[in-house]
Image (cartoon, rainbow, N blue to C red; front, side, top):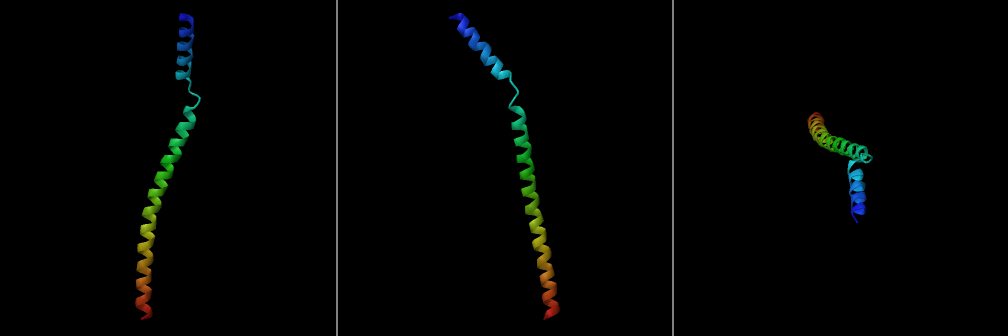
Length: 65
């Protein structure tokens, strides 16, 4: 019985020390961070473009009238 428990303990230790899946998790976190930054940047860019086109529209409207 002790040998079975010892073998199970060793297997659990081997599983805990494996680093095979860490790269995938790290890449997923980097992609998520880039996506979050791009979304925040696009939102700020969209606001700036909206303001710029609004000013252009107002200027052109005053010239036409």
